[in-house]
Image 1 (cartoon, rainbow, N blue to C red):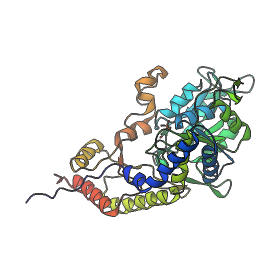
Image 2 (cartoon, rainbow, N blue to C red; image 1 turned 180 degrees about the horizontal axis):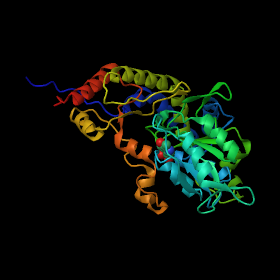
Image 3 (cartoon, rainbow, N blue to C red; image 1 turned 180 degrees about the vertical axis):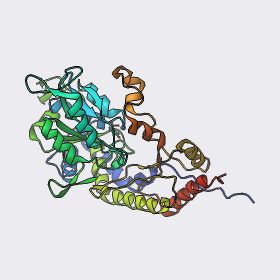
Image 4 (cartoon, rainbow, N blue to C red; image 1 turned 60 degrees about the vertical axis):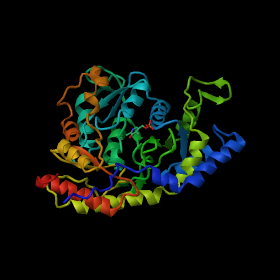
Length: 400
Ligand SMILES: *Cc1c(COP(=O)(O)O)cnc(C)c1O
């Protein structure tokens, strides 16, 4: 008997949510066309104020992309030419591109095996053993004497990094903390220091968000934002994103063309209203995956520590037979992704840093084991059951 051909399960479905909101989204465009208000104006300001409120910060500054957001946040925070900024190898390259483009040099500490985010212990070791105070009391790198001035924790996969110990170390060593929250709109971290849940993007001196279409909150094009509680940083970013001008044609500094489009802002404002329910649906799907995969010994499902509320931008499992598993799922029309297949320190673009294989073993092992399963707010239980069944069959060795 022929096996029934089942409908493909995409990695994510971006079409349906846009069709459901089509009328509202098109109205944004109509209203922009009527006033020709394409840059700046009330749509941008309205979204900025909505997103600041959503993120639990005083200010939000809309910019052209998540990469812009991170680059501008670093520049506005005063990260200087030749400074070292510490981040993780297990992230998207935009994190380190922004650091380099702000004039600084990225350096890495490894991630923790359980969260795949920055390991605070590794950061402590880095600061204690790789760095030293110079004559003026500045923290510098032992080998090259460069000032170490900032740390960029990444809330990867929508899961908050372990911020309390990172913030404590940053205070102790006088480092600025800029969050890469590009995958973590609405994620929460329980701060034991403040005895309260904190939103991703509200814990460092500034944070970067991306609204790339596939993110939990996505534009219909490129967009990003910085959130901050620091008025000076907010004001600087408003100037940097707009060619360095606080007043038209009076340029206090050389800036960038890095503004948020009014149409994208209007679209984001429409979609932001749905983000809490979409994030909740992702969390629900994650819980169902957890139950369905619990019996499969060869799979490590993501854990959620008590201090984290992940928004599951990605649902990332681990397997030592990852490549074969991915191939087998693909044959059954189940699409998956790799985030990420090669850690940053081993990318060709960073050969100049001279960091060999073996430098960050946890990130390197993760790169060979991680597999992102289908995840989006409309994923349903039937699909998840089929995915879990296919995974179970693969490990039983009788997959076809
Ligand atoms: C998407 C992403 C970025 C960059 O955002 P863009 O809007 O694509 O520029 C930065 N960091 C991480 C972790 C991301 O996932």
